[in-house]
View 1 (tube, rainbow, N blue to C red):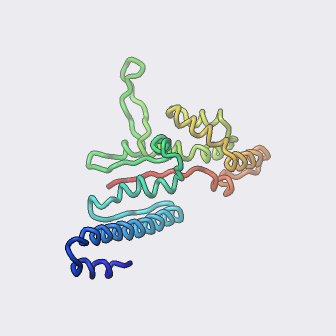
View 2: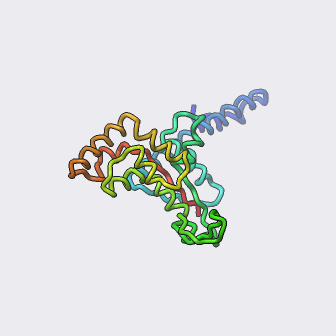
View 3: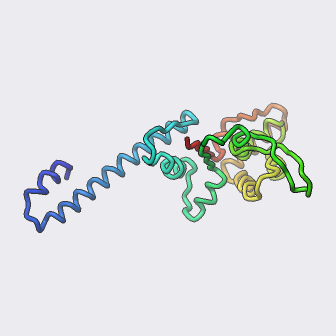
Length: 214
């Protein structure tokens, strides 16, 4: 069955079968739309993996943000457990929406007032993107400092971050493939000739996605 066959016959049959033909037409359109959408999302996902970044443009309200946050992100992060989806996304995905008052101090870092000690002081606070990079790249940061990756160093290098983020990484480095890759890289670091960009290790790291909605 194709579109031409459906549309060509819909008005030539008696009224009592029009509803049935309309149902077939709607089902056909839904099926074709879903097929095209799946192919487009797969293409976008492949482009993102290959280039590490992806620009999606189009008129407002056409589903760019939804597609990035759900269809592309779900496949990239490889979320199989629906009950854990939002919890995982809180760690591996972040999104900001640019507006006129959003500036460098919000995005990277800036001086902020701090009343936690009971009196007014000013401290350097990380912005959304810098905070995201710190948690996404914690393994690389540890190796860049010439240290080995273990639970203690994960905690030290994620100082100030939520317990949920620390627990995520402490559990993640115990997963089979990543654990083996980290142990091999740790051994090289201990011997004094390791590289913090060991490809086998990098390929096993979980993927993170940062979305800028402009």
